[in-house]
Length: 521
Ligand code: GLU
Image (cartoon, rainbow, N blue to C red):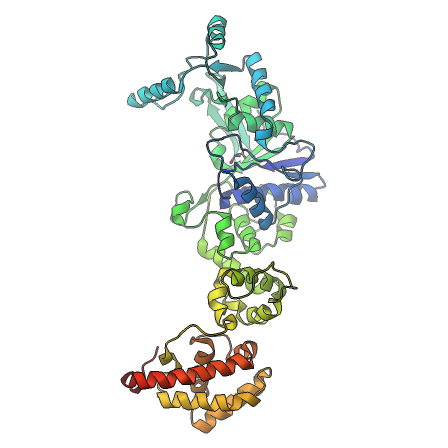
């Protein structure tokens, strides 16, 4: 087998997840690269490019109900659209393997007929015994091929007795199998190391290997982009294509995604599933940009790529075979960048709203500009967006804009450093007195007014601003004070200042020593 000649049109690729749980970021990257090859590179080159979604659900032991819908949802959220798939339909369907089992049985029968496969009647107990003995002898465990050369009479006897069997692939016992990989070049495998893999299980369901090869052929897949974990069985697949008399698709095995300290990225390093990142307030745009860079590079220095940029620039030639390291901090950085510099304010508002609703801060309802809370949320987002790293930061960061009453805060916060309790009270009293005829909508005028008040009281402006800030927000840090006052609105500002004055008085009376000592943050 040599390097495939000129790439024929069209390009048909597939993402073939097994519905066994959440979608790992590595799977999402595989889906993304497939999609970019079909909808980006191929179409740019004037070829037809189709991206298929195929659900590989024939392993009933690992099947998780609801996982398929979850994968469909999260891929849609991520921003990938498939041309053919279980829901989209298409000319090569069905696209769910559990609906194609007859096809696999027919194809297994074909291989049996041609002598490329054989029935294996070994019981699970025997197979286990063989493996135990091999392990005891320090040999690699594997099937000892007992049934490979049964006579016709033996086979008939087993079949007549209705002995359960699996169908195994008859691998050549010697020689080698080359696999050409678009990213790695030719890889050569010694057949002596390869097993007679099971193709059809005793329950009549195919294994991944049979179903995958049959489907990739029948669905006319031109390029297989999948994870590097499938390299070891790729030579068996290549042999299977040959046994059927089919031309194999091109292969590209995508590099592993490593954890920050090395090793394969897994649960114990942190979140690994797309659903988790979504729940934590990551944007699909940021994830797409970040995941594209885990294995693909453009010029080695450009890092910001929108979906459109990726479609315009992605080429398989620039996908790297060496593993990338998943950097949580960098992903966070990308997310913050998209929040701050890429999304429009309206768009960001719509994405923040479900997080605020979830926290009970605004009324629930689907996120749309018609939502009655939209106009209340938008100015708050405008004030605070540069402090948002993820959408999930919003409830904590923005809560005081929406809560009718502040959560209890330490009254000591109302008394800034080097200020006495009386100074703070005087400042708050003075502000309370001017508020009823201060137009908070006019930030500049409000600021001038507050500065003049500070001057009259003999305070630095900051010493007057801080008690006001704490009174109105319950914290010592907030966005610009006058923007904050404007957005919170006159009524709530007044009631919160009145409340602060009350609490500061009560607190002073209860804890005179602390107040006298000027306890603060
Ligand atoms: N169902 C396999 C998986 O879950 C697909 C592997 C392939 O793309 O061939 O990874």
